[in-house]
Length: 78
Image 1 (cartoon, rainbow, N blue to C red):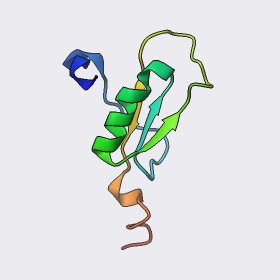
Image 2: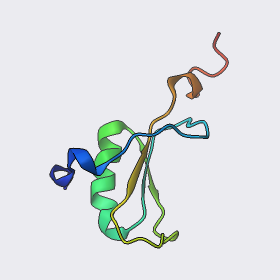
Image 3: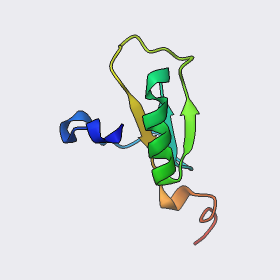
Image 4: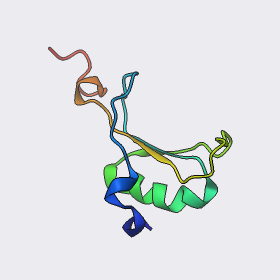
């Protein structure tokens, strides 16, 4: 599944909210396997957002990577 990802088919952008744990989100049932592979690879929680049903029909998988400064193991550390 993941071999079909092209280098020009994704974008990196900062989050406007603090990400405290790694997550992989998918919006279409047919993307669940690829999203699961990413979640396994990056030690992330898999989040099923198929109920959301965005208007566009393009494949979309969001990978949210926690800021090391915000993870529970480091919160409150100087």
